[in-house]
Length: 130
Image (cartoon, rainbow, N blue to C red; front, side):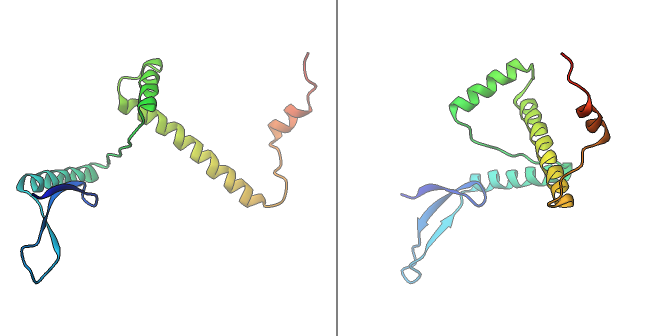
């Protein structure tokens, strides 16, 4: 009996059968009609998403992480998982932008000390208030 396996390249399932040809000695894969329809449907969705300017990304989470995210969703008053993920991505993008900016400043000044802005320089010269 053939075994169903996951085709990691396309994300689909296929049935693996040993070749009936004694001369080939090679295993071939045959996809069922239903699987072909699912794969074709997924490919059309990917093409539509690309045209619409969006993509679907997925991640598998541990039970603990999923529970924490559900609590975060409620705490932050967000309506959906998508809203929560978008808010998290905004924070991630902000951190990445700060990292790129810091790298650019370091590259520009090299080994020289980075000068303080006039505002920071004035503020650092004021006596601390008690």
